[in-house]
Image (cartoon, rainbow, N blue to C red; front, side):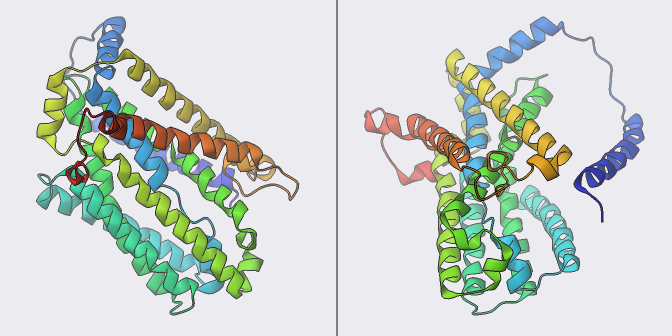
Length: 352
């Protein structure tokens, strides 16, 4: 079997083998803009509300919607007898369904409100996730049934992915599309380890789900704790919809937000510092858990399940508290505090 460093190295070789293909790419040469002037202009763009609001939406929604049931994978192997072969088939189907989903959205849903796409996609994903209760309570335990629900959920996740990324081009000034897209995608992808930390720290409240042998006993207590954990995860995922007011509905609304010209250097700096902090944590956590997996990969603060029974959960729980406070606090201040102050009126249309 390959170790994690060997597996990562094999991926690097595959990526390196694809580099010569980029030689065929042709672009018209243009005179490079002075670096200082380029960065200054980009900084002015980041100060616009349209830019930092979209970036904050991406980070907040990805953190809360990315929380998963960390006990599901070991449960699949003991309850469903899910083999590696079946898991790989599921991964292949997920990629295929993701591609088909993007094609369908590009063809039929480009002019639909991005908020509606996220709302429909998220709620449908949660409906498919809720079907796992059938497995928890042994109503029907079948590996192929689980694969169907998981792959179907990914199709709807495609709606979330496209909707949250479609507005990126609209907030970028001509000539700054690439760096704007890079910043937004980096910020949204860098928060994935934070979701993993939350996911694994939830297990601290459900001790019977911490190891595969305990889950295999399949006692009423195990099922009850599993159902409680699954409900909490679904609730956290559902709470990601509270950030929908931060997402423009469509291209027109995005352009109107840009045209307003509202700027804030404080929020610009806040977004940059947040993105860099998340990126640093993500990079350190990934490097340490891959390079020194046997030594540090199990630490709770890095998203692991714990290296020993004596390891304190306090640092990880403090980190989880800070993450959740960041998500709900920032969203509340930007979306709902103006309503409490009477500057805006609450309406359910905020979410569609």
